[in-house]
Image 1 (spheres, rainbow, N blue to C red):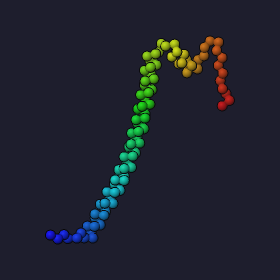
Image 2 (spheres, rainbow, N blue to C red):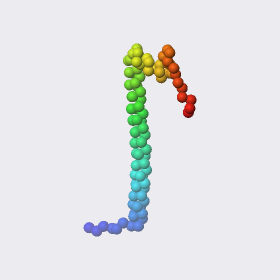
Image 3 (cartoon, one colour):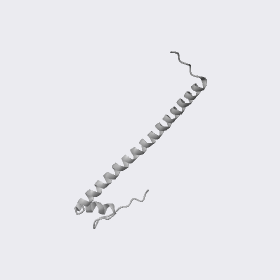
Image 4 (cartoon, helix red, strand yellow):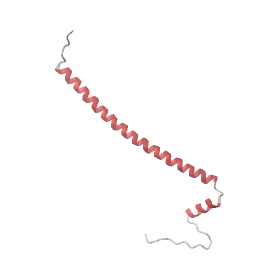
Amino acid sequence: MTFKRAGFLTKIVVLGLLIYMATSLLDLRGKIQDVQTQRDDLVRQVTDQQLENQKLKDAIANSDDPEMLEQVARDRGYVEKDETLFIDVAN
């Protein structure tokens, strides 16, 4: 059984298809990397939000704790009676 050699036009078509497939694969690889980066950012955001939710749950659970009330007061800038507040204005 003898095989006929591929003609010049067939070789050009196959070469064109190979080039198209290679560029398509490179484009898909770039898209995959972009999506993986987005996924990593979203995972980080979810983790941060879960931490924030846990802090809020703890704050709700300990809302009547004197230490928690003092911490909230300090965060809002309140001071205790007869306490002196110094504000750094050098910056």
